[in-house]
Length: 68
Image (cartoon, rainbow, N blue to C red):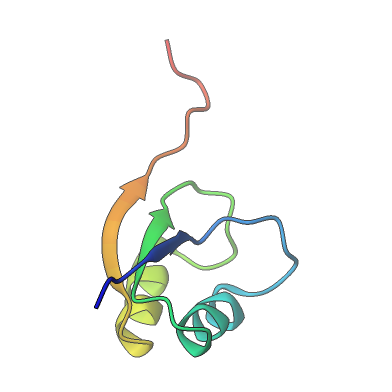
């Protein structure tokens, strides 16, 4: 069985908990975790939510703000 992931940053006005629950409910198995500082939840809370919904973190996407 192929498994597919989805990015956690998507522009919808949902909490990270709501997003991850929805991702799992529709059949996603992994996520690209947004690692920027502009989410309400802390980075450690985001990791805990992925664990709560049994979503594997494929990778994390750091913010590109203030890159030199």
